[in-house]
Amino acid sequence: MQNVTTELLTDSTCPNCWTDFPVENVKWISAHEDLMGDYRLGPDANKRFRPTRFDTHGNAIDVKGLSCQDFCCPHCHLKIPRSVLVFRSFLLSIAGTPSCGKSFYLAALAWKIRQTLPKFFNLLVSDSDGECNKILNSYEDQLFFSSDKTGLVKLAKTDVTGDWYSVVQYADQAVTYPKPFYFDLRPSVDHFNSELTRKLSRLLCVYDNAGESFLPGADTVSNPVTRHLGIAQSWLYCFDPTQDPRFRRALRGKSNDHQVNDGPVTARQESVLNEMVNRIRKHSELGLKDKSDKPLIVVCTKYDAWSDLIGDLPQPWAYSEKMKCNLLDMDKIEFVSDQMKEILVRLCPEVVSSSKSISDLVYFIPVSATGDSPVKDPQSGEYRIRTDFIDPVWCEVPLLLALAHRAPRLVKVARRGPKPRATDES
Image (cartoon, rainbow, N blue to C red):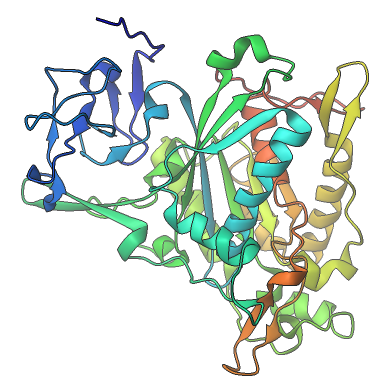
């Protein structure tokens, strides 16, 4: 019989329920169509089991004799990608108010990291599980592979129920968990740390919560939808300048974007940010005066609508002949961040104040998920994005910043000033 070996972690954390478990306790999901019904997930779910038989490829065999492919958490029974057992997780939490452009940003982020990380940083990016990334892949398809002959698209907002969440039954208590999106990040053979590929590879878990999830009382024992904030390596807060009346006044006569001139949405965005900060403290067990050493990145969306306030953005990385790799240009990024901070201090000082209350590593990063303003659809009357004009700007920079601080052996930085405080969790 063929010997099967693999390099597994000793222990891991379920990205669904955030429970730690020894990898040897992982359960499998039965493959045979007759093996239905699970006491955690209900009658429509395939049975979960601890295997006693394996095929020559190391896959478990269910009681009907079929080889199985999928794993699940031994605690919540939700499906987990195989990478959970091999790579350490890198959790990224994203929040923002409704209509802040978060769905568009997520799609552009996924699209850009698939191109930028392999091309410029020798980091391979792939979906850890296509089924788990179904919603996000659909967003990417609509924006970058649209088959709509009108060339106009509008993405659905993040919901508070349905396909975005999983429900698990614990005795008489039903608990709702958010579904993360998964990506494998692995150094390529050309990476400066390629000899450490196995150790440095990461499972990137991206959590997207609807703005309604940050209403007071929305996070409960039965609805712990934002508990990932406590163990995330970095937090992204999407701030939409076009939702703020003070920004719109500053842009009067400088922008043709209907979101600025017509004012379709106005929101007190700092309330979501404050609630996010409070939950970070709660789930991280930080005291009221304590600060985290993790970076908080304020992602200022829809840059294309208000770019006149800050000007053109530079390329945020540069090739180093000495290092023989691309380096994240922290001088340029911090210069832009400081510019953005000055604008926010002048127009929305409460956003800066709330951000600085949780971390000294705060960046204010302008991004445009589309690079173009929405136009009115003549048929529906709704505003939509022209897919032929989509050109994302700086969407990958927040993730690169998070990696530079929390996984610096994957992304190196260049700077003329003091060295950033980076924490390598390898």
